[in-house]
Image (cartoon, rainbow, N blue to C red; front, side, top):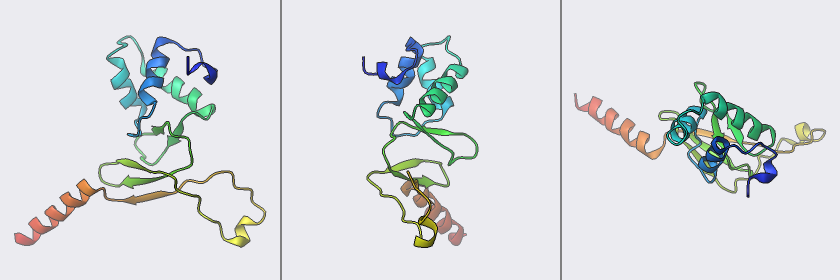
Length: 141
């Protein structure tokens, strides 16, 4: 079984959470995961989702993103990458293969950097289009 090496007790609920996360690029919140997996396991609690995510985070199998102050989001892609974040709809898009940002030499000399993460904030194409339409509409009035 592919999840055996995670060092977690593999209950059916945890397996469902792991399967939902595998390859998921939507950066779901714990509540999103709960809503999806709860259909299959109606007796599962939100606490089970949180405890599973916490265990996965500690073991380095999921990244916890705090780009949305209202809720944490989770990313099963633990390879080095950065994110594009829409400030309107909160969509998060992976930037694959993005490298690290170089520190200024005077700051980086004595600091051992192990990983970095860059977040770019703006409007996704859909929200940009809506904003433009709203702006054009306000000029017509």
